Amino acid sequence: MNNASSLSSSPHASSTPSDPIHMVDLGGLHARLRPELDRAVDEVLRESAFIRGKHVDVFEAKLTRALHLNGHVVGCGNGTDALALALRALGIGPGDEVIVPDFSFIASAEVVAEVGATPVFADIDPATFQLDPASAKRARTSRTKAVMVVHLFGQCADMDALVPWAEEHGLHLVEDNAQSLGASWCGDRVSGPAGMLGAVGTTSFFPSKNLGALGDGGAVLTRDSGLAARVRRIGNHGAERKYHHLEVGVNSRLDGLQAAFLNVKLDHWPDLVARRQAAASRYDALLADVAFTNVIPPARDPHSTHLFHQYCVLLPHGTDRNALQSQLQEAGIPTAVYYPTPLSSQPAFEGTARVAPGGTDVAHDVAGRILALPMHTELTADMQQRAVGELFRLLPPA
Ligand SMILES: Cc1ncc(COP(=O)(O)O)c(C=O)c1O
Image (cartoon, rainbow, N blue to C red; front, top):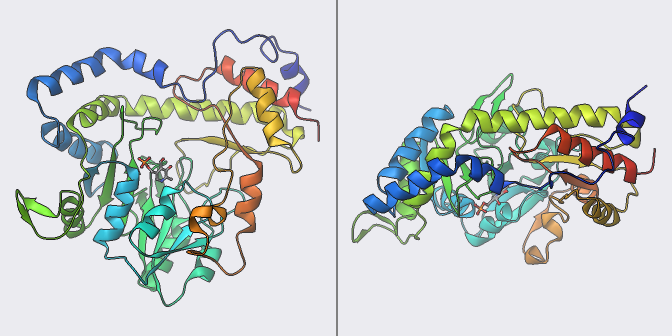
């Protein structure tokens, strides 16, 4: 028994939406925080603290404390730069291989090529969509220098399997934590905050991220003070003091203004997290009601907290996803696909990357069937009922 029929005939299921539903509602969030954000602009303007400076220092310390990061946070220009800085600081370059999950945002692999190394794509777990340790193990060769774990959609990859394995083989474990900042892993062998479990972690403050700036921003996270200093130096033109350049670096710094905005958002962090988690639980309950349509809700790894950067379901095999998305859009329900194409199939890597022995069939299957439902801090129960109601109405019964 389930409530599917009551859901489909509920006043919200196919009625004209009262409030528009957004995939991400930064406008709504920023309207609520507007007085504090305005004050942040005033302060930065008054102090002309535009590049690094007080607000960046405060933010780096505040983030470390608020998220119990237990290490160093080095702000930089964006999450892609953070990854590139991390790889450079670890000394990864031409001739090296880096294992990367085949199912991620392009940046995870792009930076490997950017430093001159070769991405080797490994498959993902069919339930959690995270890097599959068995495939990562098959991908390792004598040239493998690092394994990049992407903590996808708001929860951690299987760190109990990956951390000891990387240590055993002397591989640098790089955590791309752009989507799961604030999540933590509590396993039998490993525990701690995402981004601080391996050699080095990174994150992104892209506006739609769980902790988003009002522009670009990123950070490198590490327990290693030497590595933190190296990252800071590379991101500051290779200099530790003005006009004295120890190595060829780049310009990748977190703006004072962005840090000031991030400080405002950090004050609201517990509420921002709770809102996403509550929305995810409501989706879980709604989808359980309509389970016979074979839509698979996102799996939660019991060893990880989940901050739901995205709420992605798997559609039944054979669903015309494009048509479904168009029909949902017509009904006022936006959706998105993260990610429609595995990285190994991107033209950008043609002839320059490898795929793990055994292939990446799961990544291909998931890329063809995944669908992200609206997920943000302003989502209401009514909006979610409308979204799931329309999904149920448009999908044929199993
Ligand atoms: C998994 C992942 N890695 C890296 C990035 C790159 O971050 P940014 O857009 O700040 O460069 C993103 C964000 O878009 C991401 O989702």
